[in-house]
Amino acid sequence: MRIQDLVLQAWRETSRHNEIGPSLHAVASTLTTVAPVSRLDVVRLDREHGHAAHVATGPAGSPTGLISQAPDNLKRLIAWAEKNGVGWAAGDPNEIPRPLSPLAETLGMSPGWAGGLLHGDSIGLLLASSLDGKPFGPRHASLLSAVQEPIAVSLATDHRWHELVALREAAEADKRSLLRRLGRTDLTDLVVGEATGLAQVMRRVDLVSGSDAPVLLLGETGTGKEVIARTIHQRSDRHSGPFIRVNCGAIPPELVDSQLFGHEKGAFTGASEQRKGWFERADQGTLFLDEIGELPPDAQVRFLRVLQDSIIERVGGGDPLRVDVRVIAATHRDLAAMAQSGGFREDLWYRIAVFPILLPPLRDRVGDIPELAHHFAQRAATRFGLTPVAPTQSDLEVLAGYRWPGNIRELGAVIDRAAILGEGRTLEISAALGFSPLTSEANASSTASLQSGKPATLDDAMRRHIEVALRSTQGKIEGHDGAAAILDINPHTLRARMRKLGIRWAEFRR
Image 1 (cartoon, rainbow, N blue to C red):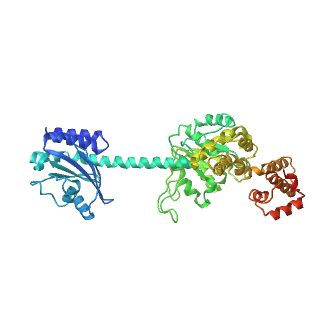
Image 2: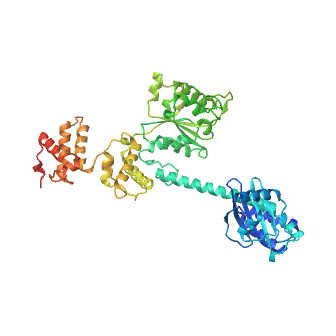
């Protein structure tokens, strides 16, 4: 076989595989037909981490892995590899260069030829053993030298490939960990109630998703404004671009410009490097500005310019930068009233309120509570590693009777708490809402009083509370299962309060 044909075949094999094992196997198999080669070995030398690794053997495979080498010898091996790019052939099989001797002993071989594998920052060694320990002739050494370069490239490719695999596995592990913490199975936002309580909202989402018009999401805290913003982004032509969420109320006033528009190195004390702002980071995507009513007046002026001209300037920079960003803003405040009173720029209000969407509070979409409760129960089970438990009809009735001032966010927190209290056996909805099943009757009575517009007196509320506890214990006061233990009060104190409130314990005895 001509050297040119061998090199061509070696390049063809190395270009077909990401890993060096199959490539070396094919090259070694060909070499055994044209030279007295019994075995080829490839060793990677890692200068950064200070170790050597046996990465491939051919034509017959054998175990590979890290090779124990003294630090000084590893340095000598690296220096030797860098100086022997054209290969070395032994005139005598027993004449092995000093750096290679301990390596060959570890590998259990006696190389008759060796050469360095250099490509970019990748360093390695190619070792060849001859049949019956005979020395290689000049032509055989030339054939081995000819395959050094393609195998060096294959070694570098193999290293990059395994680094990418490790990074991908780490990213997948991070993703699984994130999903587990979020209690979700994927990163796509689920819009519960899309066809029911949020039907009107979703119709407006579909109308505006196909355009780049600014959107203003209005609604109470916890109504799901971020979920709707992400849905608009996912259904738009920008879905492959970034989605950046910024809570304007959480940025200190002195850092607003730097956070939104970025800064140049040295622009202010502590600016040790150039930093891209949120607008630049959201280029070609969507920037979701939550609580936009909290933006300081000066930042509102610069924000208005971005909306008008799509141009920003970093703090400390003089060159304008053009950005292509779709803006979705959200607030729970009355921006229209703020604009009229001067608390928010009127011209900015008109710019961001091109397409307003009002999200209803949970109390106005009670029909969605069962589906939401089931969704949050499944999420809680995944997040906390519990057995999934579905809410019962009784649980749903309790949830439907609550006013939910914190809206969907509060519902999610209550279900999480109920799942933890239930330990994977039940959902302790009543306890999670702040009262136990034993006191639900008293709470129901108090709720009825509040809804009638006339709250119960403190003595009346306490009397009903004690009566419920006595009824549940059949009048028993003391003991671990008595009313005093349930109410977490000293039995003597309980009796004193009962006398004051006119409660006769004998009426509850059975």
